[in-house]
Length: 365
Image 1 (cartoon, rainbow, N blue to C red):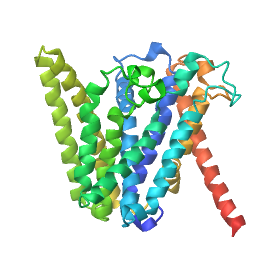
Image 2 (image 1 turned 45 degrees about the horizontal axis):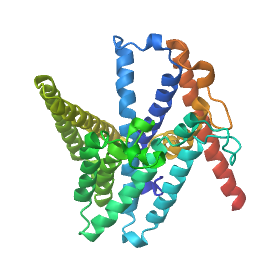
Image 3 (image 1 turned 90 degrees about the vertical axis):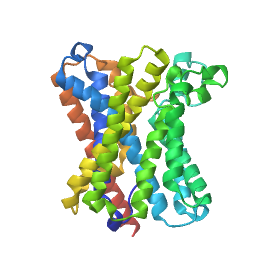
């Protein structure tokens, strides 16, 4: 999703989108290539990298929810007449379709006789593309409900986030394959191999939706120090809740309480960290009237970057990936260089895409 109007462009969101997708690219690259010999939590550098890798998806999803909802609410049109709804439905179909396409089990397209159970399992894995697609669908559903109850976005989106967060520890305990076929069960828990089931991950998109709605209602609020301070306070409160959860976890012998405090504490940590990061970046952006166009282009082409770097790393039904040659076999130096090369490659791809689009416009006009 892109900001179509320069006057409505929110610089700190552009920076966060670029940061999130580049962080995802280097995270995947390092995870695929770095030898297990160097994955040592006694290393401060590796521990920081591992922590930030765990925060990449919440940042990415939160920002996606913010941008989509911001544009949806910025239109100032009734839901059923809002052109962003049609675009959202198209985006949902595109993302889910691409999610299955990059994991397609056979190069022959329609002949499945040689597909192994393992390949089918990979095909039905729910990845971040499926998740964002369905997340957009849920955002639109809750936006419609909000309109029907008096445009109470904050209340409806927060209830939606609490639904996906609150039920998560219980949902993952259910053997969903006993009730649904694997393609459907994969959306509910990770035991089918899914990386991003709906619970709890849609909750991060809905948290972002709250911010997106707020920004659309108060278009210039992000240019104030008060806005950054509010985000910092909310993030700090959630980090404080995480600290409380750790105290409870360490002081109780009740396994149920341990499980719940650990689960909800992790959610508090992630959302709190994302809010504090938003606070810092928004504060830094207060003095900026613009940022390098390259960063805007990177944020605008997150989908292309995501798909391209995954195909390069993991391959597809039609091409091999680097994982076949270098799976967890490189030292720190070679892995670092490879991550930089991957980022450079994705950046060049974005520039080429942009120039081709401009050239096409010139030809058409």
